[in-house]
Image 1 (spheres, rainbow, N blue to C red):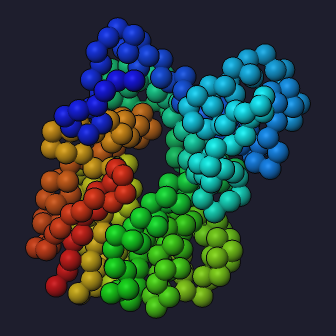
Image 2: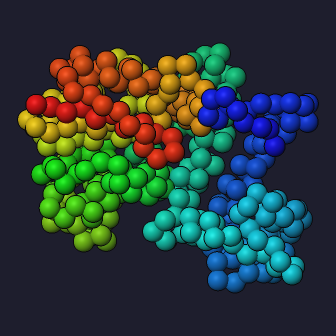
Length: 340
């Protein structure tokens, strides 16, 4: 494996073999994405099996299956002992459909949307245009595709929600507004950990049935509401705490400035605006966040990750004079903009 030194995420490639391996690492990702698509981890959850037994359960031809299973074992996703394959603890925790910690929705979206788009990265760089098939209007108009998108967002907030709750004291606020909060998965984490507050999700009207479904499942219907609209065209409801999480990177710098100003204006006196994203350093060297920034090139018209200094400048232009930042989870940065 390449050694790491200097800035976080920077690999030192010492040989042609390492460079070739890096060039083929997409195969590791596709092995995982394929296993999630086939629900391999669900098939193995309560019943480890031999390659032949797994072939029968998955109803596949079998050619290459043994190699795939051994590759997943080498990648740390399966255990192999006495001729039988079983889930590792991490696969059992995060890759079983229908469980609370399932992140496969994000991976399914990566497989169907991002993986094909990355094959056209050169074209995206030549033209500056997104390369993903279809656009978000088509996703929103199709309940099946919209549920897939929501599954991706749930996969992200399943991890990030508890991290945000641990990193910030929501109990100091009376009300929370999650702008672009999808079906409210992150809001449900906040309300679940802070019984004294109520919350609202602002998102496109097509999200509302999915929001109602989740609030009923979590028992939060009486404490959470949905406000449908377009945040560029419609006013935002006010709240003591306004959240902009993984929203700004979908838009270009001018649009980001507009959204920060609009969100800060919706903060009630004494409250705060939270902004978090996979933000970049002023001289970016973090592999994970640079990859996500290129994701935005491939799937949006003008989006990208952005430096912390940019969002601070937008908040200051909106009138905020009390701005702090802190790490959030492994890759995100949380910017807190307090209103007097």
